Length: 387
Image (tube, rainbow, N blue to C red; front, side, top):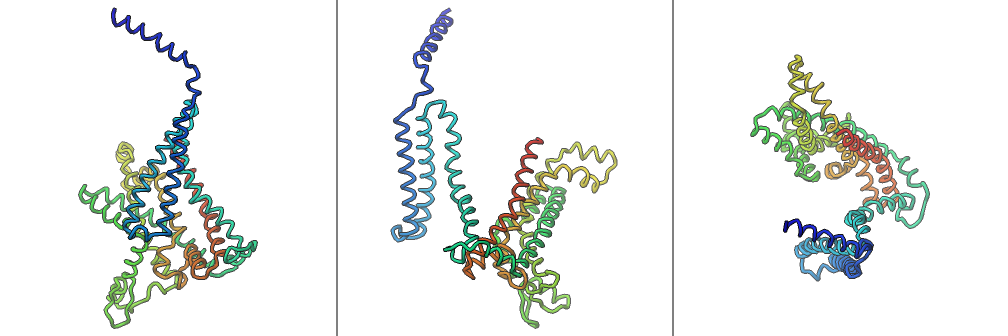
């Protein structure tokens, strides 16, 4: 009886409190609004000045190690403070507005930096593609006429197309083969095999190019061949070759593609192996009971169920290949007919000081990438919708 009485006594008090202030959800907290707004302004101002000091007055901080540590500490701490004051500001708004605005408020800084670092430069690049070599005056379509009338540009386009036809397909095929074969090994053997295949992913494209330059190294006939490929070639009775200078049948470009395939195979293997392990065992057993061979099971049961992952890997590698630059720049810098679009852009901008033509090349590359990005987004949405 006592518990029931206390319960009934408390219920009216809650009703009275809400009735006493029916407009509570419309009220603001001026103190939080002011502190939050002032705090955000101060944090942004302090961070901006500090990072400008890093760039223009590094001598104030002693050495680069101190600058690096301060950049990490102030960057992380400043971001935490910025979101703290942002949260305080949003909490000071009327409750209904605050609840609706808080997700957008926390996304806003990220969207701001995306706009600052990606969207603004994109439109600025398009703008500069219609300007002269030093971007001081507009010249209309002159830059586009120059690049489309250049034999080097079209050679770069052909090379890029060749890369696109070979590299993504080989990477996906190699990834599937390694994933299937590795899954047949014992647990320790599978881990070792996958680790070795994935290891090149930890190496930058520049480092990988340097490694493969040693493989393709050339010494004069009669000297010891330190390059692995020439050592094998000479062992079979051939003469040492400058492999990256042989443009016959685009051999040198294919040898450069090997470097990217070596780098990307681990990426493809990891994703495809995960997809293969996710194939329901029931479907495989049902196919075996029906008398299907292992090859038939693979093509008719496994592949259709990992098709989404195959497309994802293919498109991702396709976009990577479309932007390939590091490998060509480090190995040949586009010589011997190996140039590609990204390397041509780099040389136009920095070696020839042709900013207008360089940005026009980038715009062409951007237009080529857009359909692929659209397809990738559409594919992801279709995948999510089908789950």
